[in-house]
Image 1 (tube, rainbow, N blue to C red):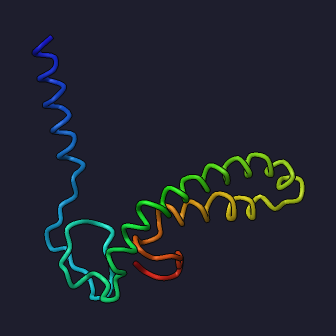
Image 2: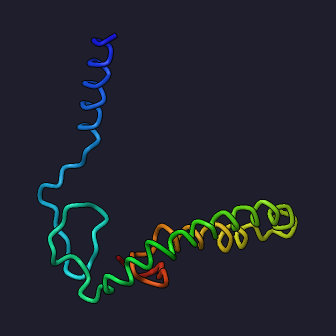
Length: 120
C-alpha cells in the first residue's frame, strides 16, 4: 500500500509539471494586466483602487455576486421555456447567467463595474 501511494504521488507531480506553463521571455505592455503570473510591475494599471475598496469587494460584493448567480440560475431555469418559445434565450442567458458571472469572477478587484471591451 505504501508503494502504491508513492507511485501515485510521483505521477501526480510529473503530470503537474507537464501542465505548468513556462514564463521565460514573457513580455507585456505598460498599462495591461496580464492574465498569468508572474509579470513585471510595470504591467499593472497606474490607477488601481485603494486597498479598502478591494477588501470591501472581497468581503461584501463577491459573496453578493455568488448569491446573484444562484438567483440568476433559478430565474433562468424558470424563464427558459418562455425564452425558447419567443426566441429570446440569448437575452435570458446574457442577463441572468453571464452578467452575474462576469460581475463575480471577471471583474477586477476593487472595481464596481465590468467593462467587457476594456483590456485588463
